[in-house]
Length: 284
Image (cartoon, rainbow, N blue to C red; front, side):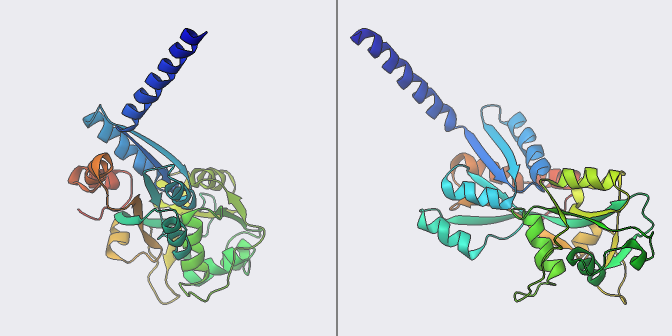
């Protein structure tokens, strides 16, 4: 019996050692759904060039990324928003020091169904639509049809950004909220699919998800301003009014394997991948 347990103990110890050795060459990345495709593209190229390293990428939203970083469940948190003060306080209480790195820029596209005749909106009209003040497309020159609102769920950095910068117009004292009938969907792709199939729908997501199956809406800051499409050049020039930085967060300044991966992301090759996935590089 003693020998049997000794064999089991050795086996478990060996397995644990093997896992630890493997873990030294692996990175866990979690967070922003907006950045999932971009992060996976970085990962594929990085692992192709570094076959001994392993990077795992999962989404779930920016809030999920921060929660995972704080709990030690990931090495890198992807985020389409800045970390909040309360998240920093929670992290430091657990011995985690969130370190912010800007890795790209994103234009937040507003999309409707391709059959919708409405193709341009002001920021005020957009706010009125998503707060429920405007509820029918005929109020905007479209069909007599009730507007179907599509939003990301509250844990999403995209949801937070849209609420703070569109609904509340950047005011820290703003109290505006999404209309209660807004459909909260779990991913940008879910919004894209619903907008493609629902003639009355309107939604928003990172412009990297825009495809010929949806119609992007041109946005103006006000009635006197130019209506601007969500394109890379317009985001880079600052003309497009709904744009934001994209971040990764690590526990303290990156070191070791994490630094190696971050250096790749910020390299010319990594920034070319940003451009190829329809985001805007911080370096061109």
